[in-house]
Amino acid sequence: MLNEIPKHVAVIMDGNGRWARSKGFPRIKGHEEGVRRVEEIVKVAAQKGIRYLTLYTFSKENWRRPKEEVNFLMGLLSRYLDEKINTLIEDNVVLNVIGEMSDLPETIQKKLRDARKNSERNTGLTLTLALSYSSRAEILRAIKKIADRVKKQDLDIAGIDESLVNANLDTAGIPDPELLIRTSGEMRISNFLLWQISYAELYVTPKFWPEFTSEEFEKAIDEYRRRERRFGATEPARGLPS
Image (cartoon, rainbow, N blue to C red; front, side, top):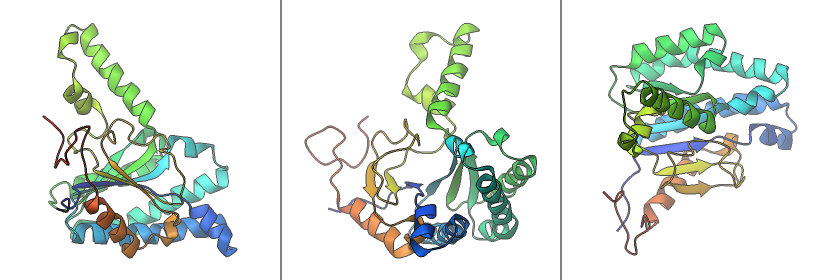
């Protein structure tokens, strides 16, 4: 029996620069083409009934890139919000952000806050952009919030469990991904959703992100549906054990 369509798919969008270099283009061309793939994948995810799509858009480590490239990426994000957010809202998409938004330029922070507010009543796909995101930093923030409650005697240590940790992560209220896709063939997680992907199926494709079309996305979904998910048991399971 095939698995159901995953409710939550997370994507490490990798390979923009290498794709551009392979074509003889400057790196920025790869980022521009990557934005087009985002639009395409958001549409097909919504059409297939996926409820949550989380995209690793800009990591905390990406700030180490050359200033010119970082500035270009921030400008590209700003233009995307200007040009596409109304379409997303009209398409019933909810926009969400995880990561340290305070690291971003103030103009982009405002656009993201406005986009979140204007889409919060939508009922379709929740699109989460991971921006200035680090999973280790996210987990540390959660630990500090919980520790502060213990220090204030608002929480007993015995009350700390997985559900409490979940509630203090950036992704609070969002189910864990069932499927994690990584493009460009790299075999690593890159500090992305380390807690949340504990039981996720991994799908790695050699395709660079600008090559990851809707057809490639559907291949990943089909592969997920064919897999047996056991969660440590000996028989296939349809969900996490209680």
